[in-house]
Length: 256
Image (tube, rainbow, N blue to C red; front, side, top):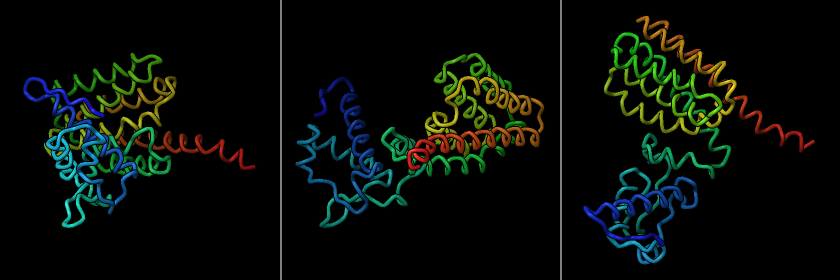
């Protein structure tokens, strides 16, 4: 049961609504609540979660706005098929990439992310080489230096790596890339945990590839910036493939 104490400006109620949104969203995206299946009756949900009718209806409205639910006459509120979901919504992305995600689903999602990055990031780097300001360069440099100084802290490297890619997308100065930056950052949180788990490889391979992108952007050569980003993505793709092979290796040996 969720605690529904009310505080100033209604903030606790909003926090409670988000907890309920997360709980139901994870069940839908994780497959516990399947497409075409109706949510349990409202009274049952109220009892299960210990929330007010207002909070429950607000949470359902939020999920409906993300394409996960739809009210249907005589059927109630029904889970929508995946094709209807707002695939680039940060919450939906975070619910997709949980520790409980089936390995095959996680692999498929990360492969799709890789393809998406190939479409977006090299050209964004090229634009950054043409449009980056001093402030943009400073943000990209700070992220590179944070990677270099992360030492054996994988988490510190993750954060710096995420900041680097967001800074590069911002440096392109195209307003349509701003929501994409947030999407890529959210999805990369899971990707980096697959591809960048080795601190030594992060220092010797990944960090220099990021510095190369920075130097190409500083040079003002859009061609060099795109090529540098492509080299980085090739390395990321190779790491991802190696990680999947590593996870499958025990299964192969046990099957002999």
